[in-house]
Length: 312
Length: 258
Image (cartoon, rainbow over all chains, first blue to last red; front, side, top):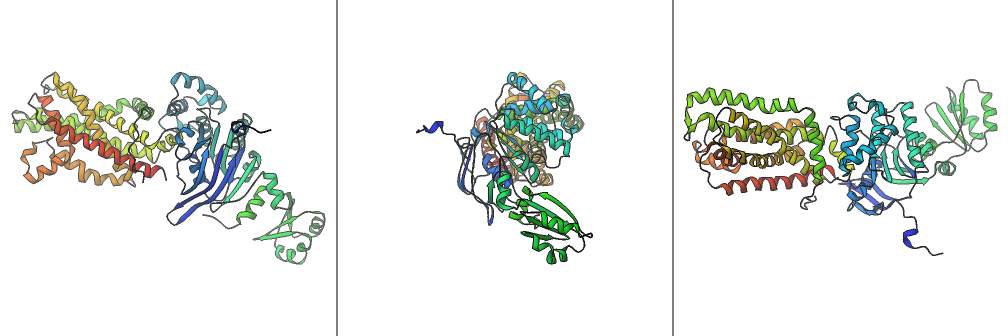
């Protein structure tokens, strides 16, 4: 059957050949990406990979040097303002209004969307409940913990009932309790059908939340796929981390024969294998070495693709 | 650089009302500040020094000085708001960044900040006007017409201060603006003595800056003396507003959208 154009699901974000240069420096170098409605997509990359710049381009706050971009059907940056009326943004660094209470923050922010007071009075209570901040409604921002602030930032980004939510490192700097609560909230937004685009450098976060992960480094996309796909594409199913004093020699003389691929980082050998039986048997005889056998994860993919060098 | 003219619409209103809401929380402290300094000037210089001077341009010195002080108070309030307060919202507090994630443009934010700076300068300078009336140095009800002029003065100095704020890397930079522009204007534009007592060359400099024009518009309304060349003075203030608002928008876009 031939479908009319309107009926085909149109990608929420469609980026073609995006580039961003600042003078000599290239921050984003040819990004092609489509995000579909209802997807949760994670942009993963080391510091300076271009995650935040890419997000700013999507919001129309950084005009691309080259390439074409539309978000929610609006050409960006030309019609970014109209697009932002239907999107929400949770910034990397909180920019809550310190002069106001929790409730006032939601109220004042809602007015930037042109929402009338009556409508805001209706929308704010469920958002306070969503953010688990009902008891703090009249508290000034300075009295909130990091987790509370982040929850308020998310609630604030929902004031206009957006279809698309941009989250820049939503859980950076939070303790595990606070992080788990945020994850739970983000999952509930996803199940409501909202499209989520988040940047993170926590692999665990990406693995738990994202339908698809985009691995970015030096302004380029290295690979895209579901966490499971990326792991099977790049990493053997088993990882054994071996450490101890004689690990280098052990790897050369004994370990190497049993593994498909190994990497020596300091005093630890990362061994990647399809079949783990022989290696474990060998390791049981090595008293001076300790080892950990675990399934391959997204962090292995990430480190394989972006390398182990420090980025500061 | 995006040199296109600023878009004008009503989206500045929530930006303005955000600032008004914050001000309302601290209104008492803010009013005491707005009003305290000029009140002391009025007492110390108007009464104290005025007693020695007697009359200037055919009016008691206190009357002469009060009309100048209303204008310089409008200038100071808009200047402080455009410099320190706007700089804080733009940088430390990231308030502008938050606004830009909503469907607002840099143009809307700048206009909201500008109208707010002018509003605040009307609040503070109108307070001085009332105090001056209580001192008995306001001639008649024509002085009510000063209020919209104070708004225009607020727009003028607010726009200049916002541009400085946007171009400044830190708060320290503001000192240049005070020392080179604001303080000389305050001292030589006719607040304390008539511009005509300056050497001719200096008079031309003073007429190139906006405060002297503001005072020339306000003084006759407060003192009941005849006014002259009204439209010229309005035109100078208006030109300052338009030019600096435009430049502020252009440089704010460059700062925020990159």
